[in-house]
Amino acid sequence: MENNEDNIIKKAQNGDNDSFEKLIELFQDRAFAIAYSVMGNYHDSYDMVQESFIKAYNNIHKFNFKSSFNTWLFRIIKNTCIDEIRKRNRRKTISIDSSYENDDGELSFQLEDDADSLETILEKKENSELLTKALEKLSIEHRTVVVLSDIEGYDYKEISELLEINLGTVKSRISRARIKLAEIIRNDGTF
Image 1 (spheres, rainbow, N blue to C red):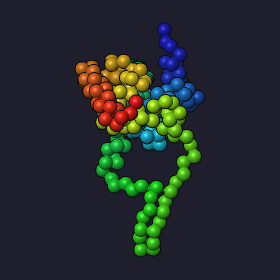
Image 2 (image 1 turned 90 degrees about the vertical axis):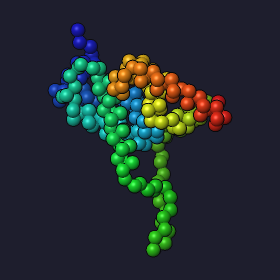
Image 3 (image 1 turned 60 degrees about the horizontal axis):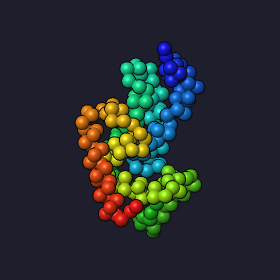
Image 4 (image 1 turned 90 degrees about the horizontal axis):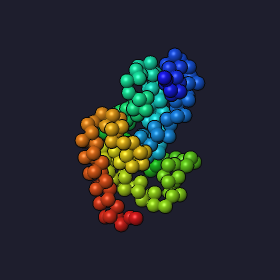
């Protein structure tokens, strides 16, 4: 017997935009958490989720129900984030929140953000800012597995499927990530 999610997916595959919007509603919070675990900041994570949903929309006809939709979607998000990081590493970037001097004098660029960032929301909870800073010091691989396991609640098998790595590697990375996170917290004097 098919579940409701499968029905929604099949309708989306047949071009029903309302069904695809329902899928977005179902998965948007976890999608953001996955993107944040890789990107490390609110704005980039938001952009990556948007781009990933566009990719999912354009490719939903390729979803074959052999894995869970959750796994399929989160692979798209993970790969989109990793591709963006690779692109950034290949090109030079400049900050727009600073001053630059040229022949005409000094130019100052400052953009205000009136939206609550994820960090702002997390700061409202005790010690969450410190934890976020500690997580940012982890490598992408370690941060991703810790967020998936300890924050998002995925089990080792699900993480293995999402990240396309073997179960032993997942266990090893989570163990190392937790040890490294404890060292960071201890050395920074947090908590």
